[in-house]
Amino acid sequence: MNTGTEKKPRFCIAIHGGAGTIRRSEMSPEKKAVVENDLLESIRAGIQILEKSGKAIDACVAAVSVLEDSPHFNAGKGSVFNSDGFIEMDAQVMCGNSLRAGAVTCIRNIKNPIKLARAILEEGRHVLLSGPGAEKEAKRLGLDFESDPYFFTQFRYDQLQNALNKKTIELDHSDTGDGRFGTVGAVALDEFGDLAASTSTGGMTNQKPGRVGDTPLVGCGNYANNKTCAVSCTGIGESFVRAVSAYDVSAMMEYGKMPLEEACNKVIREKLPAVDGEGGLIAADHLGNLSLPFISKGMYRAWCKAGEDIQLKIYRN
Ligand code: ASP
Image (tube, rainbow, N blue to C red; front, side, top):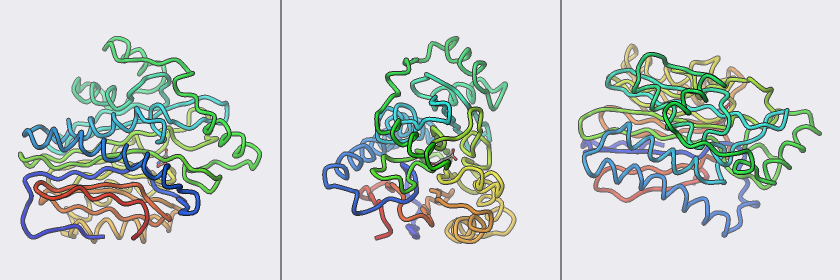
């Protein structure tokens, strides 16, 4: 889908709540209203910052934090269980101006992984911290922790039992039934011409402990570069890692002079299936164009350009 316009907007933002098998038959009006409300709250948190001449990176962190606090998405509070019945979360944020990135992987009990990723970016010494080391850093910074019951939902537990019985590792939206939603992300362009991208996830149901997906790896599930674009991916992480998908969009724009929409479509519709992939991405370029392609049944997504209404969609049409 091309949401590009001729005129460069003062700012733009897009968010996603994951891609996958999202069945219309299982989406009751009540459930739809709840998830749409969360997505709207998330994008409004980002817009509020951009409207007041705030930075793209702040808008991306704010939008993702809202979805991490919701039980309906596979990030923060709503994260899925790994095969040992624990929750391990990944997150990354990148700034297109400085090419600085901050990321965390395999972290437990931190309320907002994206805030820790942001702090690592600001500090600038390291890019990616994992497990206990990352948790130690969060304590040092005084970030909020939550105990296991905060992250527990019966639905996620049932999803794990299902996956264990079937011996599968599942995307949050795989067709195991009443899907709560997926990995979350945001991309934004601010009025200063700076791009940013943020992504946060609990990974995949029944993944092995210690598994690292695409989300915390720079250029795989998340990337931003002011010369080209900002990208946040969702789907089977291993495929996005093998295809280096987020950076590939940027590289095709930088070296191949491809427009955003064409580069995004090539990555999602051609390159991702070639490595057994499934999913989608959201992207913004330095001209304020947005692109939100996916090859799964649906992708929870919303977007907005300055001066225009917020658009929100789940399915193709
Ligand atoms: N990409 C995430 C991962 O593999 C999962 C998702 O997008 O739902 O960790």
